[in-house]
Length: 412
Image (cartoon, rainbow, N blue to C red; front, side, top):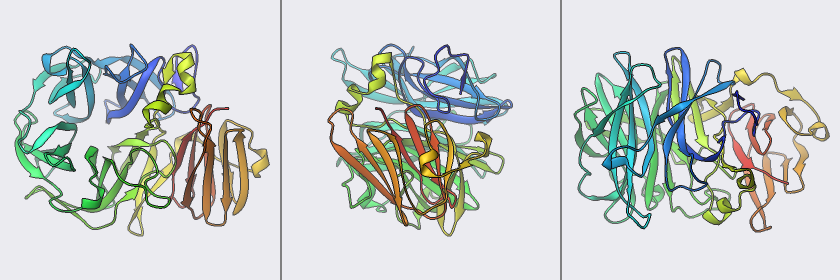
């Protein structure tokens, strides 16, 4: 929960006190605390302006708001501090982000990769633009992910090629200040999952396996897969830091098979790997009619998830800090809480607009869309017991096997 808020819109999730939030940014454990930065427009319920908002926690459950970490102030970021990551070096916290520039008509016309640095993790000094935009790509180059490998630093960026297809490109540095362009880390791999843009790349090593996450835009739905307007998923493989290439060894798999999950980002602390996302990517018409807008706020972040590799796949679990899940029959689930369902056939009706049901190895979310009144479904295969985390207007479904996660906003 958010400590100190007069009105708590959610009990478990990070939410906007007012205005609109989206992607999680800069996730890190620094100076003995978990830091979560995220995209925030404090001035309006739209995406025309962004700062990095900031919350911290000692336990991943109770969060405290801090002042805005980074706000527009330079010509290259005057319209918004867009997504990025942080990394610690020599006791200092370096933040990397995309600066956005809009014209007088409000249209986004340019973007630049920027940096800032902090000694305390709260107050940041901007370092300015890092390099010029690379040739061979449109202005859509953004969302820097910076990590260290064998004494060198690498920056991954989501990008759009001149042929209007997505790509992930890399830069290399030895000091976080001077960067050299490497090129595409994918080559001709994953052509079916490029879309017209690949956003929010992330690379994390879990149990000795490199995991590349990204959010492609413009993919075509296929059966129960890729049903949302934009998607977020991962592949396993190996990052070759000598040649700057990621060798893909598995098929692309979605991280969440519910309605709202996008722009995932990871946090590594010791041997633990956590994952957050934005539980708010949706069509513009749906976003404009989001019921919370009446109260002056929009969107939430997902809860953090623990990650592991098992049987050649990424597994995701609720964090233990949340507490124990109560084993119940479906009719006992009445609202907020942590619930566990062991049977393989049941139905839970959260509101008149959202129900969840299991039939054997299949779980289905059935929701009435708030903006259209149309019924929509999301379906996934599961093994093990089902775990439900129910908040005021968002539900996350996990399994004890870690094989499936589904997230949905819901309103009556």
